[in-house]
Length: 145
Image (cartoon, rainbow, N blue to C red; front, side, top):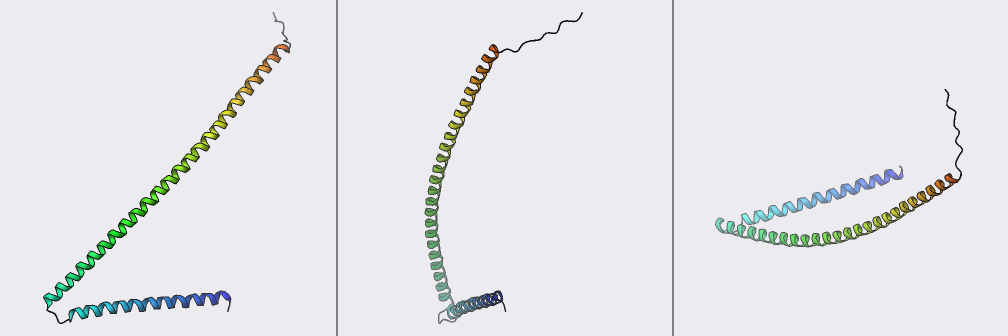
């Protein structure tokens, strides 16, 4: 049997053990809920009193759940506000740095363009002045009658 086969077998057993544990836990919790419901229904109270107790317990549970939900909402909202402000400030800083880099490159580019224009104008001036001194001879063909 290869090493991969051994490892695959171990993984399979681990998955089976974990799924068996989750099934056992689910059955335990369901049994507890059914037992609690049976205890309430067979309690030595009248139906009206029992329904009132169930309603009170339900209201209290709903109120506690609502309070917890509001608490989680506030904590989440504060955290989201913090994250937004942090991201906003970092994005602003990055945009500023990019703007500065673009401006610097733009200055370098415009300086290079200006230098190129000056060099072109200087070379053109030199070429024109040398052409005046060294003009090529012009050959004319006589007109034919």
